[in-house]
Amino acid sequence: GQQVMQIPQYQHVQEGEDFTTYCNSSTTLSNIQWYKQRPGGHPVFLIQLVKSGEVKKQKRLTFQFGEAKKNSSLHITATQTTDVGTYFCAASGGYNKLIFGAGTRLAVHP
Amino acid sequence: GAVVSQHPSWVICKSGTSVKIECRSLDFQATTMFWYRQFPKQSLMLMATSNEGSKATYEQGVEKDKFLINHASLTLSTLTVTSAHPEDSSFYICSAGLLASDGELFFGEGSRLTVL
Image: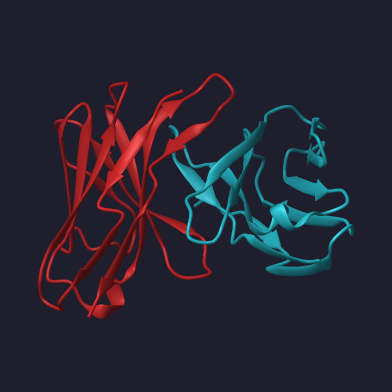
């Protein structure tokens, strides 16, 4: 079945440093979504990427979808303590089902 | 936007008892809902697809007799963990089978089950 590999599992940064998490699939993805989950909370939708080579920005967050639609990345510039949480990529598993990556847990130290 | 509500948020039960978790779509009808399970510090794993008026479709490795899913109306799906054991302790999250125009899939707040 559909699988997405996500790395790293954990990232510890100092406030102000940048952060990137990567997702890879062995198969071509129709789209990819990114979610953020705060400790104790539920996943919150960040964005969906659909087009090959697509780049979208949300303030300090930059999302990219690879040209082959097999990989994606989320980059946070100048992290803040409010960025703490686990970031998941998720691929469509058919009809609104999502297959989640393992997630990258981000810790930001002031 | 569309809202999905889960109840209860927290539940603690004794081993051997059954626990029911509700997932409601508050302002829309959902013919399909999805149930996910998340162990501490792990990813969300799809357990089953809940289909209104018909049997749920379970993912490989998920025991259908253990995790009973009922989707009796267009706004309510329930997950019952039968004869719960400590290894069933987890965070259970539902999502509605509805996409917003930007692709967002709406999740419930999650239900944290602790089996003693």
